[in-house]
Length: 393
Ligand code: SF4
Image (tube, rainbow, N blue to C red):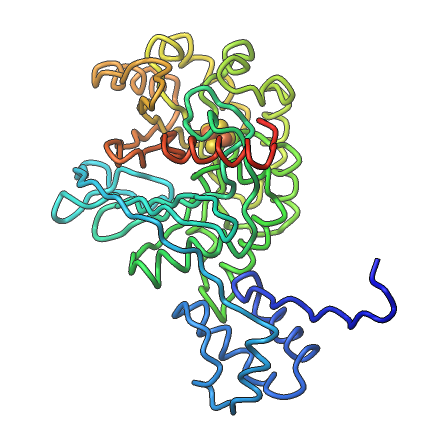
């Protein structure tokens, strides 16, 4: 408790990247005696250029100083960037935002992974995925680590250290675009962490991304992927963002196998997940993304394909994305062969399901699906955990 004689604490500067334009205008009016009128200009600076420069907007030193006292732009530091050339296929041109199979005019492009640092010394990662024809998708993280513990995932093996703040998630997008100069049309929440396990931050981030004064992301350019947080799916539905894309990470469509691969299934079994998805109809032509990591000898039989079809059939329109397993540091199984991948996709198509094969990108730099959360990062986390006595989740 503060003693009566102590001076009142100065309010902490607010992260500009965590606000919508409307919120910034309101806070500027509340906090600033003069200069609040440039709030919209400040917002454009932050979102469209990644800078905070009130002086550029004609403010004198006192008003600009007041802005700096009450607001800040603290983008995450780039620790390192690693990249890998990847080959794109010409055969499956598509506009779908979470697709990895579009053709590139040159046939080759770079997958790049940026490791970013939080102000408290943690690291998290975002990945630039080329989509063909010069377009790219940014895959962003929502947490440092993840508590979901999916057996095929490097991040899951880290456990959860903490969720990222709105400013840290937005920092990925702003750094990628304005510091690294990456150009991307789409954003997918499929990096480190379960996005709906950090739903408050995710929802505010979605609002900011869509803000017309700033980044003005079209909703259809954003995809949220979840392992099946039913409460989170219901919150997304309540948001009213009708054109937002949603995908689920399925990976098995019988409870015994899915529970073995994905512990979340023990608390939210398939029937419950399916019921939530049946309710999620944001628009008439909504297509649910169903991601299926193909694990040889674990979930790749004809029967498994039939089970996927049985799970999907009542839901309505779906697009199954088959993702060949990327072995990490402790492989659960081996890479699937091309023949195995083709056979499984064939079985799904025989069941009447639309299917895309996701091309593996970034495997050599641990930037492919399921590979985020590398060895160095895990050992850093172990050290931090022991220093802070944090529990393993
Ligand atoms: S697949 Fe996603 S939800 Fe599962 S452990 Fe990895 S990051 Fe977490």
